[in-house]
Every structure is written in structure tokens, then in C-alpha cells.
Image (tube, rainbow, N blue to C red; front, top):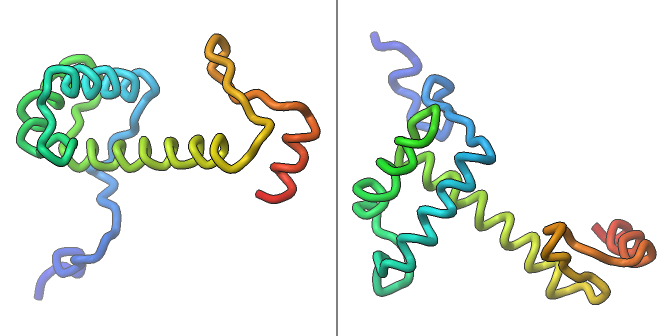
Length: 121
């Protein structure tokens, strides 16, 4: 008989493989992604291939981070980026009265606008 964990093929997290992302790691990945896009490394559909990520992005990222990242870590952070983008674009698109302060890098609004937004959310 095998170990019950051997047969578990569900989506449970392998805690031994868990690597947290620091803000520095995230910023470095973002800079590498922008650089890759500027160099034309994206596919016809506009995304980076797994091969390019593993061959170009991850080695540069891992050279500068404390904990090495894998392609699955990359996919997880891309999902996080997508969620962040969706939240911010929803805030800007659907709610008049909000603005963006490029110096402070924060959303701005009058107190009444925030109160109304938080009631709905």
C-alpha cells in the first residue's frame, strides 16, 4: 500500500514548495517583463512563452532574489498581477470621482466618494 499523499492528485498546496514573493521580487519581475516586451520576446498573441520565461526571465530573476522561483511561481505572480490590474481598472472605470496621484502613486477622491464606494463594496 502506498502513502495516502502519493495518491492525492488534487490541488492541495505543497508547503515544501511554497515560496513567498517580496515586494522587491515582484518589482524585479515586473521590470524583467517590461524589458522582455520591449525587446519583442512576446508571441503573436502578446504573451511570453513558457520557454522564454524559463530561459530568459527566471534566470535573471533568480540571480537577484533570495528564494529561487519556478515557472509555477511565475504563473502565480502573473495571476496576482492580473487581479491587481482588474481591481484598479474597475475602480477607475466604474466610479467617477476617483483620480490617480502619480507622485504618491495612490488613488485620490473626496471623502464622500470613498464613503459611497465602501458602502457598495
